[in-house]
Length: 370
Image (cartoon, rainbow, N blue to C red; front, side, top):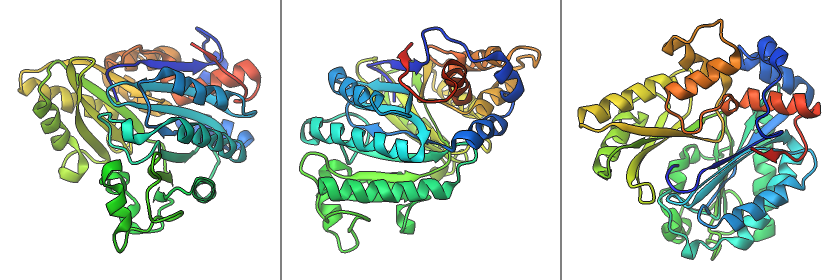
């Protein structure tokens, strides 16, 4: 995502910093810190993607409803006008995250009509995608079970078709999100009416205004976009085709070329499915070099939601940031090397969580906006 509306990051207080002792003790390893938190809280992350990015009042209403759910932390929110899409990052224990997502669904379905929504990002639903992600000691099975519970509830309450994807998929042809979302909202009716088109839950017809929802369980992915200093969409699409795995590119990389009218440029919009197989620095350098070969510079990059601490530390190692620097400093330097807009150390999930833990004693409660 990129372009129009900007990130509104959410943390315990404006300008707050993670607890240094926690950062030194746990910050150098993604696994150690998430397990330190997870062993106590059995945390689940949920990253709902909502098909609304042009009406701040609608997104604010959804966020305000989430903030009233006890025991759930809103770690991040990002909206984009060109994509006409918003992404939230919620964390809590399984049952409280489920309750928060029921609130998100009720607000999104009541307020969004896809018949008048036409962003650049592919979508089939008002509440388009709902992935549940295990953190710490939480098992993937917990998130698979949670996806099934939420999908069944959503279909029953709103008479809405629901697909299960990724690790929660019940059909092999529905593991990949793009394969499910390929028809878009406009082609959803025909896709559902096909002989093998029945969803996993709900009716074999689209909801008239809310379409359908894709619900799943998956490991952590990094949603990251690179803006190019050009308005030529063909360049962004050529780069996206070159780097994405399905076309023979980088392992675990999904990519699209997208125009950003509000920003006057184009974007390579990406999901990095496994930052350990293909680190962020490798993707950045590949896109930069491909753009340069076409005479185009990079404008900046943007992170949608948060990224694992280990992903930033790998970039810091590659960029030569000394290990003697603090964890905060290394993450911030890595984010700046990647040209991430509004770079801060709290773009790392574990540091955002550690800040919440230091401020409240547990990663829950109503956060204040940065």
